[in-house]
Length: 112
Length: 113
Image (cartoon, rainbow over all chains, first blue to last red; front, side):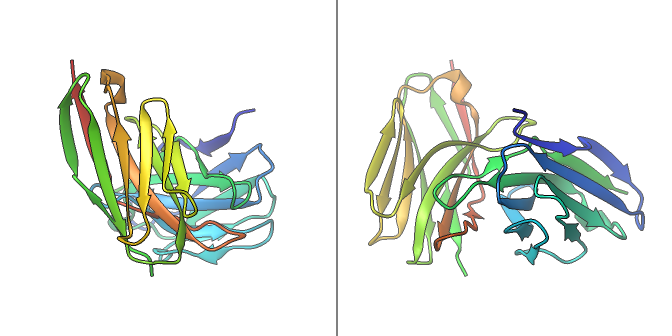
C-alpha cells in the first residue's frame, strides 16, 4: 500500500512550457485534491475532484487544468507555465468526510 | 468564505517545555478541525483532529481544544522533544459528504535540546 504518490519530485520549466503532474492513490479514495504551497501562505486549493470523471475549481485555479479519467489518478496540467507558478504542489486524497486527507510527498516546480 | 488565522508564525521552546499554537476561524458552520505536521521535504501528515461536537481531544503528548463560541482552536504539545521540530498547520472545514479544508499559514516549531 503506497498511499499517495506524486510524479515527478522536482521539475524546472521555462516560461511558456507545459507539463503535467501526476497524482496516484491506491486506497480507493473517492475524493482527490491539488494544493500549492508558497512561503508564508499555507496550502491553497487549486482544483479538486469528488469522483471519477468530475473536477471542480478551488481557491486558485487560474492557469491550471485537471483531469480524473481513472479513480486512482488525478492529473494537474500547466498549459503555459509562468514564474508565478513556482511552488511546491501537493496532492491529497480522502475516503469520505468522516476521514482525513492523506497527502503525497510533493512536487517542487520552478519556472524560470 | 472561510478564513483561518494561525499564531505564532514561529515558536522556539526548550526540550521538555510545552508548546501552544492557536488558530481562529471565521465561518461558524465549520465543523472539522485537523492539525497537520510537516517535516522538511515531506507532505503534511495528520497528527490530531477534532469535530465540532467535541471540546477537547488528547493523544499522548498532543491535545487539541475547541471553543466554538469564540471560534478558535488550539494545539497543545507537552514534554516537547527535538523530533517535534517541524511546521504545524491548522485547518478548518465545513459541510457533510465532502471535505474542503482551509489552512492556516503555519507555525514553525523549534525544540532545542
